[in-house]
Amino acid sequence: MKTWKFVASAGIAALAGLAGMLALTNPSEVAYEHFATRQLSTYADNQLCTQAPFGLQSECRRLLQQNQTQIQQLVANKTTRINLLLLSIYITDLSISSYLPAYEFKTIGIAGQFHVYQAEEK
Image 1: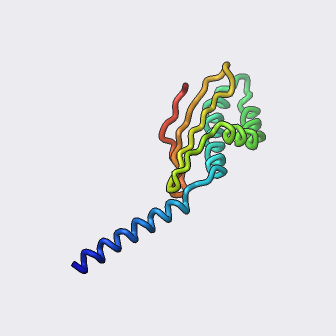
Image 2: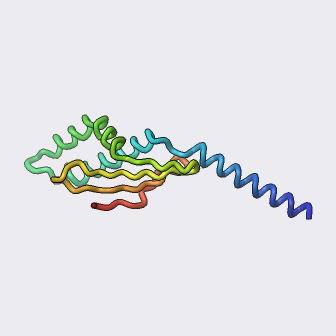
Image 3: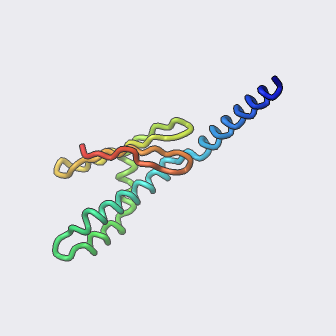
């Protein structure tokens, strides 16, 4: 019986420790903004700049690099965070104008990492 109590106590302590560790490493909104800005910039570079006409690829890349602050601000303004203490869910709705396609990204932030689990064109 004492062994059972010890095992149960150790299990509860381990779960409490894990929960505490997850809560401490729940990524912040600013960390998400940096992550999403990098992801969006990489996507734009790979998908848009490579298809730019008349040798404008380098100009497209230069504009991306020079406007990182504005891209981060756009992400910040278009993102909703659901903080669940142990993890966070970020929903980013990138609908800039009616002339451009709109996208929605759902990302989970847990243990200091981000994982996009849904990306769709609206």
